[in-house]
Image (cartoon, rainbow, N blue to C red; front, side, top):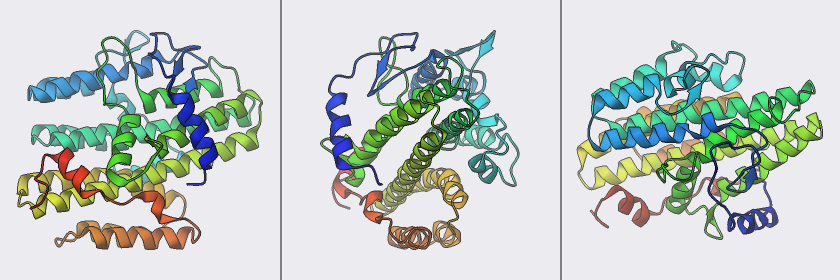
Length: 347
């Protein structure tokens, strides 16, 4: 993580003045970034997450699947936007998409989601929405922005800044009356920071970096600076890498904690969550040249050990970038993770 502590401190100060978001996002301030265009369709997907969450609480599998497949709150032309639409959008040529779907049908993650829901594995299903669907689609929007700058398509409403806005809307979600709290990727990053010791002045270091870099790529777009936009995108890609690896380490540690407490069903579900996280972060690592074979073997082992998986990740990272500080991935806080899982302080 190469974003300076001075910049993180500046962004943290700005966050103190964050406010609620209006329906039309153009010109609206949201968590350290001001939208250049209207992407309310993307921010309104948070309402679908809220409704899916409520359906999970009611164990209404039919509603959980229906909202995912058909959408509910986000208009798209004469129809509705849905998580299935994002999941099955063909972005062939985008390296992360190509690697994630290699050997799989376009419906792979949607099929996986329905299977998890029908099995009552709600944590697993939730992870599928947030990881391989939302993170992958978000990174596609950032890449699309960078590509538009290359050809001079830089207008706020439909050019590169608009794609950045769509990505940001996916990261922070919608806020205000009618929206639920705690469902955005930014919320996930904050929770992850608490669980992995990755907070800076009380904020997720990943969130602070994402704010800075998202503002940066929009500024580069407006100045028609293709080299600057490409550099910002590369750093955003690195932040997704750090976020994903931290998630995987947390997921693996959580599964091992459940096993230590002899909670077999929870361990099984948390191992499934780790598999979901691996389904997008390992392909992302591969797109930049990492060898993930040792990590995959450690994840598949019956004798599932956090230290072996962590060390495999560290070795793959060191081979890729010897100067990268693996402390950026964080270290599990046993007490916080157990508390979030509802496990005893010690087992």
